[in-house]
Length: 133
Image (cartoon, rainbow, N blue to C red; front, top):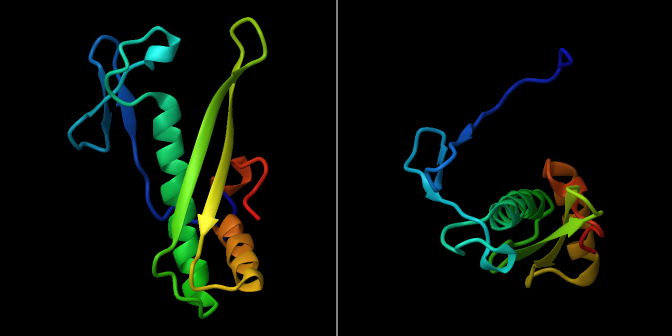
């Protein structure tokens, strides 16, 4: 960590075999399970859903910050994240993530500037391929 960096917040998640839940930062556990499409029960949240939720909330918070800083009204803004599980063969898996950003009060130029700034703010923004335009 460089001298100018500082921790602002931390979170912890713990998954234990056989519990069907993940405990997050001392709060009640979230039900988890493998998706039915991959042979699981389909009950609870799967890692792809949790990752999509993290991407959507992180990027949306960043959009609100960037919009407010640039004088754009964030009312009605929306971020939709999509995560796909991909395989390269064998047991090598990777996530592929995309997102759409709606900012109804902005014209195209304002929206592009807000999204570009939001992608710099959101620590998960560089995980999107392609990034939202």
